[in-house]
Amino acid sequence: MRALFSDILDQAKNVRVVGTAVNAADAREQIAELKPNVITLDVEMPGMSGIEFLEEIMETAPLPVVMLSSLTQAGTETSLKAFELGAVECFPKPLKATPEQFSKSVGKLGKIVLAAANSNVRDRKVRAEQKSSDVAFEWNGHVAAISASMGGIDALTTMLAQFPANCPPTIVCLQAEPMLVDTFIKRLDDMLKCHVRPAKEGATLIQGAIYIAADPEHHVVVEPGHPPKLRLMARDPVDGARPSANLLFGSIARGAIPAVGAVLTGMGSDGARGLKLLRDAGCETFVQDRKTALVSEAPEAVIALDAASKEVPLDALGAAVLGRCSMS
Image (cartoon, rainbow, N blue to C red; front, side, top):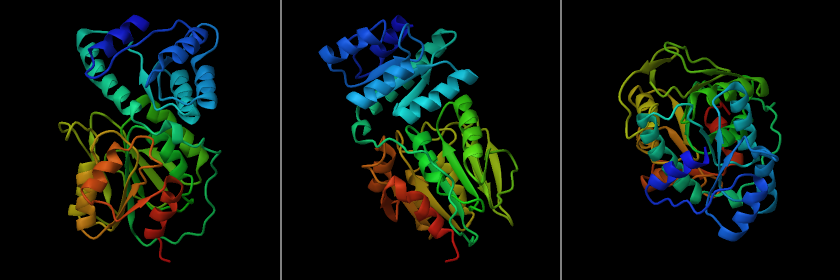
């Protein structure tokens, strides 16, 4: 596995592998000597586990860490734990490295490592245990639309914890591994007082529900109506993203649906153009403050287009969105 990932990263543009380690003790010495920008860390290691070593790294000398984990039920639970501890991303270990899969992995993992190298891991605050909000909320008919990618699972956990049981209908466009998102949805649904479910074709947007779109085979858009509905579209990726936040936000703007939009931490620029369409349509739009975003590429793209009404720190984003969806 070390040889496979070293080969993948050596082929990635602007990435250089400076060392490999057989276990945590070996890694500890090499990190001190080589001072890498990013660490890729396997969950499964002899002796101290990857999760235990990740916790040590984040407590002693935080560094950007990309976890390598299996796409199983246990693997996705472990990945969520890694995000809680401060991992920048969790990348699935390939079960079968066909030439086509290998080629895809080269580009994807290379981009992840480069984004991790420029992430705000050292400034990240450990997330406290979140409890669902008991705030009094009276809905004004606006829907909430949110996008996130790298660092999004941690950011969404913090933001959505502020949502009450009768929260506005909320659609989240999330770029992450589908199996990991399935586990994330179940965890959020248990944690929050509102309902959290995957985005499905024809789903009616109702109060008290959060719909998470992460199917890499389909885009999600909102169809106007009373109430609006979700539609899934099997189209090519848009600017490299599927589902595309630009398409989601754009469909809401074109349908003149009362809404508030927000772009959170993430790689690339997906969501920026769509958020600008929302703002131009008269909707309130927010972007996560770059200092609190684990990966600031997406927020920076939003700010460059002047697509957000306001830049908001992560711990205040939930309240900001709820405020624009409230009668008060």
